Image (cartoon, rainbow, N blue to C red; front, top):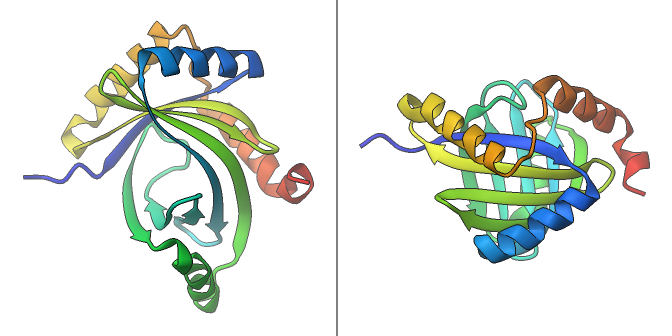
Length: 179
C-alpha cells in the first residue's frame, strides 16, 4: 500500500473578527484536538527544512516542492522535546543557518474528515488552514475537496502570490515584527 505522504492544504488569511468567529464555529461543529504554542525555525538551503517545538513535542520536517503549493511531499521526524536544541546544533554544524523564527498559537480541530488549524502567528497574521494527507494519485481530488470545504465556510482562498509576498516581507523583517 502506498504511503499517504502528500500534504494537501488550502490556506487563507483571516481577520481577527473572522478568526474569533471560526474558533467558535469549530469548537461547536468540529472536534477540538489541541491548542499549541509553537516555535518553528526555517533553515537556509535549497529545501524547506524546519525544526519545531511546541508545549509538548518537537520535530524535524522537510516539505518538498514549492512554498505555498496546494500539495507537497512531507517528511517528518518526531523528536523528544529535550532534543530540539540538539537538532538546531546539528543543522548549524552542517552549515545551515536559521533564516526565520516563527511564533504561533495554533488551535487544532478535526472537522468533516479534515484537519483544521487556526493560527495566530506573531508579526504575520491569522490563518485558517484545511489539510488532509493523501497519496500522490489523490492530490488533485483532495485539494478540490478542501477548496469546496473552504467555500462552505464562506472564506475566500488567499492567492499564492499574496502568501509569497507576505512571507518574503516576514523573512526580511521577522526580528522587528516579533518584538
